[in-house]
Every structure is written in structure tokens, then in C-alpha cells.
Amino acid sequence: DDLLEDPGLNQLLVSTGSSISQLFTQDMWERHRGVSRYWRHLATITKSTVFNRIVEPVLLIATWAAFWCLWNGHLVPVVQAFGEATLEASNGVAIMERLAGVAGGVKFTHAIAVLAAAAAPVSVPATAHSLAGTALGLVLVFRTNGSSARLNEARVLLGNMVRVVRDLVRLLQYVPDDRRCEGVKKRLVGYAASVGYAIEAHMRKGRTRVDPDDPTAFKVDPSRYLIRIMGEEEATRVVNLPGASHNLPMVMNAEASKELRKALKAGMPHMIHRECEEMVGEIGKISGGAERIISTPIPLSYTRHTSRSLMIWLLTLPFALWETFHWATVPAVFALTYLTMGLDEIGIQIEEPFSVLPVKPLADVCERDVRALDQLLELGGFPPESRK
Image (cartoon, rainbow, N blue to C red; front, side, top):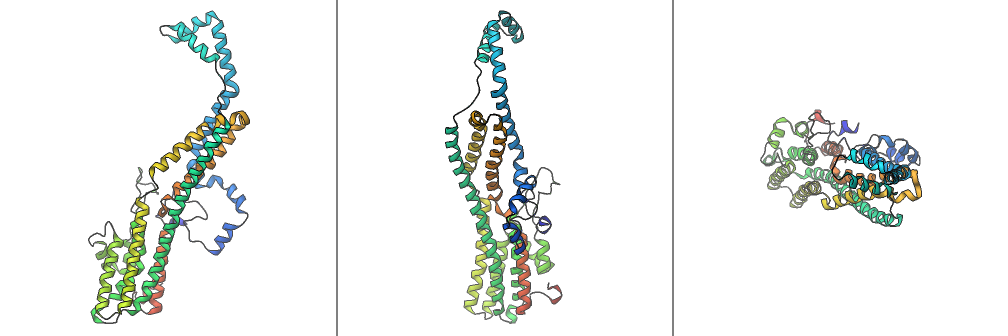
């Protein structure tokens, strides 16, 4: 349902059921904070977006741990016995020499036998690994907190978009009914109702995939929304203005300022004009803030160092757990890998927040509220038959 309502969401990152991609209702909040969430979330772990995205590396690291448990628990005595037998049996040298098929086969055989006889379980002190785990935990927390801050900032920007649009339309009742600014109210109402879709299109310029039929490949086209709100002629004019192809909100803001200038010349109060211009400027700040979030990730060196540190810690984890856990090392490594990689994956998923936030539903809210205010204030921005 979320994807039908907001197809610009990244389908690889959207969970089934409740998610940050929805506008929550009171009933959804009740379910969200209910104590049954512990059992419900555990029972649906296999449907989790995080789990399904990291299950491959989690299983690979668990397999790595199983191999070293097999080595420490069973293969070491076998290899040691083989090496000792090879050193003692003179005919064993000849057999290994023939198998090696290289010059100096006796030396090669002796070296292999010595190494085999010296085989030992692989383990590292758990204390050193625990200290490294503490540092890694801080790195993961800082990384996830940075992504969470970006998500919060993006949601504040979208909330401000809805607020500014409402306030702007409320002030349009002060546009004079003068022939010198004929059509100004209608165009400004259309701007307010459609600028949310323009911002959405600017934030979601497209995701490419190798497979062109991949449903996660998507590009928002605001044309049909603009046509529905402004009419086909006006919408076509706006989307074909210079600069509209790469920054539609900027062009629409400039057009809104031109309309406000006409209203000022026709007698719009200076104070109201200034407030309206400030709101148009606020829309520009919202668009610019979203551009900054999208174009600038968390420093890549930090992300890379986090990934490298996490992999080194997880790949050496079986050696630290073996002395205490023995074969229980495998499920322990599986669980710890899921928990730590899950934290890193959550940070990655929300780092670019406009792929998971309800941008389209909030643009719909803008249009809905503008239509309601247009009817309430009798602005005449929409013909009666088009009002919802």
C-alpha cells in the first residue's frame, strides 16, 4: 500500500506493515508502542528489511566461524598425527615426494610434515577483542546517530514545507481584486498546491538499475500533478521554462515572486507582500536543505572505516570465543554478526532519508489543504468542479 501511495520510495528499504514511510495515525501509534511488539517483531524477523539485506554476509561469517570450530575441535589432532607419522615413516617421504612432483621433494615433504606436526588451535585473548569491540560499538553508535540526525532534519524540512504552504495560501486573500493582477491569485494558489510535487521530483531525480524492469528503478515525474492543479497549458509552460529541467522548485519560486510583484503594484499591502516573499524564500531554503542532504553523505572515509573495522572484528571473533564457547561459537557469531551489521545497515538505510520518508503523501497533504483553504477563503484558485 505504501508503494502504491508513494511509488518513489526505495522498495529495497521499505518494510511491510508500519514504517517511517507512512504518516502515522493514533491507531498506528497504539500498535507501535504496545508491549506485544517484542513478540511480534521477533516473529516477523524473516520479513525484516534489515535482516533480508544482511542475511548473506551474516551466513558467510557464520560459515567462517564453523570452519575454524571444525579446525580447532577436530582437524588439529588429525593434522598433527599426520605430520608426526610422516616425519617418522621413511617411506612416507617417498610417497609425499611423488605426490609433490617437484624438485627437492624430500625437503618439501619434511617442511609439510613439520608444519602439520606443529598444527594448533587458533585463538586470541578475549580481553583484547572485547576492548576492540567497545571501540567498534562507539563507532557504530556515532555512525547511526549521524544518519538519524539527517533523517530528523529531512523530516523537519518536509514538515516546514506543509506549514509554509498553508500560511502562504492564507495570506493570498490580501491579493487585490484588480485587473492589473488578474489571474495572480489563481497562479499563486496553483503554485502553493503543486510546489510539494516539484520538491519531491527534485529530491527523487531517479534511481538506475541494471535491469530496466526492476521496480526499484524509479524517477518522479511531476507533470501529471501540475496538469491536474494548474491545467495543461500552464503546467506545460512552467515545466518548459529555462532551468525547470534541473531545478523545478527554483523556477516555480521565481514565478511566484513575479506574481507577488504584480500584486504589490496593484496595491497589495507591503507588509503582506514581504511576508509572502519570505515564505517563498522559505520554500527555497527547504529545497536547498534537501539538496544538501542528498548531495553530501556522511564522510565516506568514516563509512569505509566502520565497514572495515566491523569486518575485521567479526572475522576474528571466532578466535576470541573458542576457548569459552567451543561449538557454541557458531550461533554466538551468527547472533553478534546480525546485531552489529544490523546497526550499520540501519545507518546506511536512513542516511539518504528521502528514499524512505513519506514525501509524496506530504505533497498530497499540501494539495489537499490548499484546496480546502481556497474554498474556505474564496480565492478562486480552483473551479468548483475540481474541488475535493
